Each structure stands twice: as C-alpha cells, then as structure tokens.
Image (tube, rainbow, N blue to C red; front, top):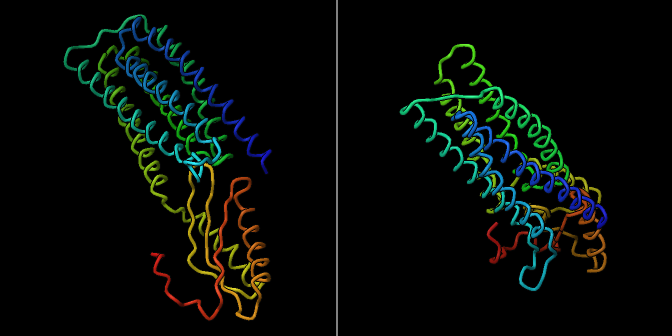
Length: 305
C-alpha cells in the first residue's frame, strides 16, 4: 500500500514539474507574440498565462506539503492544502478573466491595431496543442490519484486551450473580414469562459475545505457496509465520510449482540473496517465505534448526527 502511495506521489510530482516548465516556456512565447502583433486577444492569452504560472508555482509547493506525513502539530496530515491550492488557482483564473475583459473593453474604446498576425497565429496554435496534451494528462493523473490539486491545475491548463482557440478564431475572422473588433470580442468571450472555470474551482475548493460529502462515494460505502453487516448479523449507523485532499476518512457505529465478548466484537469490527478501507487504497482511514444492541438507541450528547 505504501508503495502505491509513493508511486502516486512521484507521478504527480513529475506531471506538476512538466506543467511548471510548460507554463514558463509558453508564457515567454505568448508575451513575445502579444508584443509583436498588438492583438488584445493574444495579450489576454498571455495575461492568463502569467496568472497560470503563479498558480502552478503555488500548486507545486502545495503538492509537496500535502504529502508530508502527520506530525505533532498536524495530527491528520497536511493534505487539505490541496483544496487551498485549488481555491487559489480558481481565484487566479478569475482575476485573469477580469484583466482580460478590461483589456478587451479598452481596445474597443481606443481602437485595435494588429500586425504580424502570422507569427501570432503560429505561436497560439502551438501553445493550444501543448496545453491540450498537458491538460488532459493532468486531469488523468489527478483522477487516478484522487488529487483535487492536480485536477485543478489540469482544469486551469485547459482554460488556456479555450483562450488560445478564441484567439485563433478571432484572428482568422479578422483576416477574412478585415474587421478588427473580432479581436476584443473573442477576448471577452474567452474571459467569460475562464471566469466560469475559476468560479467552479473556488466552489469545489470551499466544498473540500468544509468537508462536503460526495453522494457517489457515500453510496459506495453504504452499499459495502450493508453487505458486510448483513453477513455478520450486525447493524450500523452514524456514518460519516470526508475526503481531505488525499486521504479518505470514514467512521461509523457498529451494533453487536450483547452476548458477544469485546474480543469477538473487535475482531468483527476490524474485518469490516478493512473492507471499507480497501475501497480507498492506499489512503483509506476507517474508525468504527462498537455498541451493544441494548444501547443502540441511547443518545450520545457529544455527537450532533
């Protein structure tokens, strides 16, 4: 189990380092293209890349912190920083969208002057291709490892693809029609889409930080527990589940016949816990509370649920 965890971390580090390197190279290329062409759409794409680089740097730091083991001051580990990173990335995306929208409005008011579009189109097309491949890789690694941090970075990279696509459409329309305002209009449309992704990431980040439950995962746990307790003639209640970024935490109460010894009940509870933990290998943490049937309906004032 530990080996799988280490391998997952190495895979995430590798793809995050790749994302950081790509962010630096593409930012330099886009800034150059924006200066050469004077395009507000390309400028907006470059501005989004500046924000993206800052977000990737933060995410790279957060990834390493999230994998630090528990210590004397953080008994449950550090992996909730993954949600903080996702929220920061969402905030950065939203800030970029505002900046892009502002620049587009400024171009509409003061006019648009476009030059050397061939160079800008080539740079933007290459950047879109690189980001599409990178974004899909990040999303796959994030899903495979259950990492909100990596998925958020992948979502951010894919917003860059949308920005670049809008730039290419705008410049293509300008070349066909000669109407320069396609450029800022495309930038505004890209900004609206980027804002949508940013708000979604912030929403998911808050849900993670506040331990919002996942109905699909909770149903998996309930289905498994229903089978396990039925086989053993038990029952359960007070199920709680949360995902802290890397680790899945599950707790529940198991109800046993009063005639069972503590040792027998403990052995059965350990078996049930192991089955539930298997759902989330290698990072499932399961705790059960043992109750005699005669005390099943007694109130426990320290619990709200």
